[in-house]
Length: 284
Image (cartoon, rainbow, N blue to C red):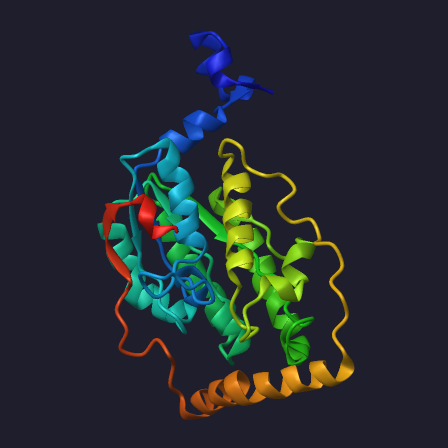
């Protein structure tokens, strides 16, 4: 299929004849809003001037490279489940009148004990309200992290169920689907930070690559999900020490918080609650 700007105006009016060119896709958005949890807040991707950037910040910079007038808000907060996104983030997001929304939702429900039928209902409510706007909406599946966290294998059936929900809703509401689950690179430990729960800077960059490709941005990398070259196997003793350190520094505190019913996101405010310009220094 040819791009619309290559055809006569009469044929452009019929979308069966063409697809928007990547440049048109890139410049048409001026109000980008991201909602969700720690993944979209950017944990695991530190920045020297502020706490975290993350895939959504990286993606916003790609959009801003083609449209300097882009404004970007990020309402995502670590630890939030789908119900909390519905109750706390949806209305503020809609009030910003976005023309592009990123809403990769549900991973904390998979890790926790949320009833998946209730998660489906909450996702449907969020997505249905977003679909009523004129915004393009980006949703995603999630990678299988059992290679980096073997305990996560116990939750794999819940992850697969969530991914199927998001695929289904993307089709129902004509959303842009970023399929992270199918990407070999995101099962590689190098795509994950030392806590094994959040993407590394490299992993966040792959997510931004995936979103750019799914949306059809110029110069998007179609091979973003290809596996990395094999890494050297760690010495068995070093691997044991690494796993023990992870259990003490990350897993145990997380498990205690879970037992107490508290979250790292309790009492936190969004890092970027209003639509503001994207500036170059934020990425470096």
